[in-house]
Image 1 (cartoon, rainbow, N blue to C red):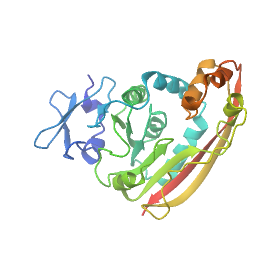
Image 2: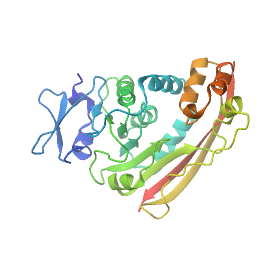
Image 3: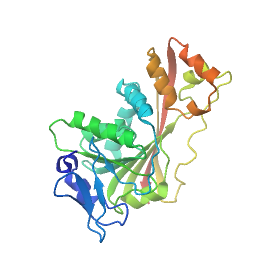
Image 4: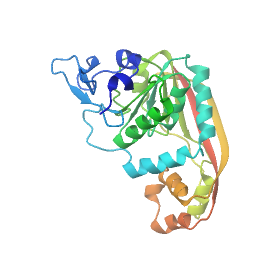
Length: 291
């Protein structure tokens, strides 16, 4: 079991996390392996083996499977989306105060949040998949090595974050469900929300391999409404091309898309028989400020 005195940055514990059941303050247990709240019932949350925390009281499983997380981790670790990750880090540095506290709402395996933490920010990542946050916590350990922890990863819903009101300087939301009202609650005054979605021609090369009549993406439909909680500050489109020759990486990329579950077996086989996949990758980044 993890030693939470080593896993948790002091400011994340004291300034951000609360009991997801009763909203009370949390403290580390005497054996350093659990978080215990200061409420009447003293709710207890044991740390996961990789260092993540189970902070979703009504969670009965869900999110990405262990296999899906393994595929996505392999794909992202290969660097295909590195230009998008670097662009995100630039936006964070531009708009979020140095050494600020950031929430990754729908963090997955922590690819983006660990890069942000490595540049000096405290990051709290939440995802419904225990396999994803376990992978994120383990990756953070490898990156961090002997340095103090800058991250915490927990099972939790982006619609019910176990966090104090106005505790964060920034929220990032990368291809995950967007919950503007909840993000406004946890952000400080003038806090920053960065949302990423698929650009118009994102993965068009993949679509052309699979479908007879590929179509352009329509863009995110769950972006914050202008003037309600947030004001749009900036928009950035990042486009680049990738070429994949590894069949496992092709399958991993496909599994990361919403098309994966809606595609027939016959169309799926087209990708499996493809020796090489070249496709544009386009991220649309939207930068909002809390009002």
